[in-house]
Image (cartoon, rainbow, N blue to C red; front, side, top):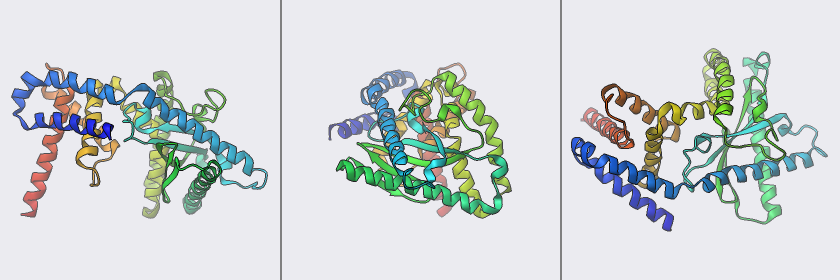
Length: 329
């Protein structure tokens, strides 16, 4: 596979720099590393590839809405009837997606007034999420049969998430409630049959303002809940507020080079850690953003390059491994 071979070359080329003394790299090779890495990533990640996530997501959502309209004729109590909208967040909305590696994260939303959140009946809400997810899964399978295609596949289905491939692109699907109805997430909000789209900075800021106000409500109910329901409420909050993670990873806040480091480390994980336990995308992003802030404190007069963050990441990993090995001894 040409794409995979090219990926291996890129990662191996840059990882070898990380074994050299830091001061030599910083003075001689780091700028070249930065330029070369940017060019290589631009070759792999094109705007058309990223746009495909939105195009196929809208195609999928329209197909699901068609199935819902059909079902209303014979199923007046279809669980999907409560869903008012959807959002595509995750690495695609963050513009940190890598074609063929990254998945689209679709969250179907329904409105739940806070006064109707009864801690004695959280099981009913969990069942509701499962029923909606099951209905979507069955609809996908029905569409696949009707189209007679193997380009639509269910990859995994559990209580908390549904994973599928839609015409070659992987999506993870979650269900979540919102305490207020978000107009900008409603079906057909942008235009007819267009439900998900790249958020502009103004739209993202508007969404963040809403979600920042809503976050404490979620947190309050998590703290109040019995231990057995905390995980369910945390998963719902994570999905419901997923656009906040997009907001906090924007270039204006974390810098271009932090995002470049994240992309490189995603490629590194794919190459070096395939089939092994590895960090989630969100964890990589948080770590890189933290390392960027850390580097700013003692590298104030020097621009912080992607290389600096990547180097720091591997140093921290090495320190952690050494510490764990020492404890075993």
